[in-house]
Image (cartoon, rainbow, N blue to C red; front, side, top):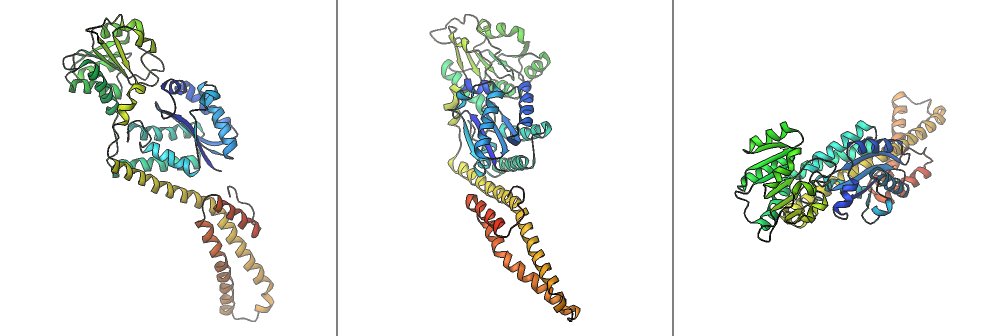
Length: 423
């Protein structure tokens, strides 16, 4: 059965649409239950990150698979399928493998070589297997993708850390406010991105820094690392009131910073008294905050230009692309070999049966032969059969795509083989 990938990413979709497509834990569990029950999708892995939602699966055909996957994405995200139409992209067979390999290598990320995606792809495969929708085809695809991602990071200099996102946000803040040195700062969240934000603020001389998080203990641990203070989410408004810049990067499924939390934000010298950098998807900062006087907000959408400019050298990107091509060819060859194996086995068995039949018919005429002579005749018969079958077998392995599939079907018909599964 062929492989199909269907998805939506930052390249075609707005941040608003990506937010609506984001699958939290509850929706993700329900989505996998739907996938397990969908008869049109034999195996499936769902990749849901801040920049993309993609479904990879083994399907009966392109058309039926496309319709089933599109229906699934709409139902799982509660977004009408007609709203997805302009943003959807599909990749079939080798193209699906190439796309996933590029994604895993960080070549399809907002920041070239972004490192988090490799772990996210690996986790997606594990989750699918736990939910019962993973199978040999998609598992092989994702293992090959992870191998590709590792090769790209080991053999090239392509690879940007999440710190690039933080740096782009702080650059935007400095463009608006000037130097951050000595300016009070707030970090909303206490995860990996928040830790990078706190460190980056300290490196630029910002401070004092207040870490705000729902779990006070995690906020205290991060604040201690940068000499800051920690408060709970209930004190967010007070923390923002005295700050010039705030980086928001929680894992919340909805906004945590609302207009009432930032207050009036009176303008200082015609500029903004508070600059909010929202690095979360879904967004941490409610869109209405942009309307508060004296408050400026940038999110991932606003930072796209800065992030894409961090791509690194063209030579390294080219080498990474070559690695992807090598791995796609290897994956395609292994997949084709797996599909051809039952056909080749059936062909050889047909040859063996023909030899045995002819030997049985010739048994009376061979009865007078010495055992060694009989063995020589049998060996000769089997060698002739193997020789005759060798050329079509080799040619079948060489042909690719639709031409190769047509050759396999013709071989099955010509030799009257039992139709092997997947051939």
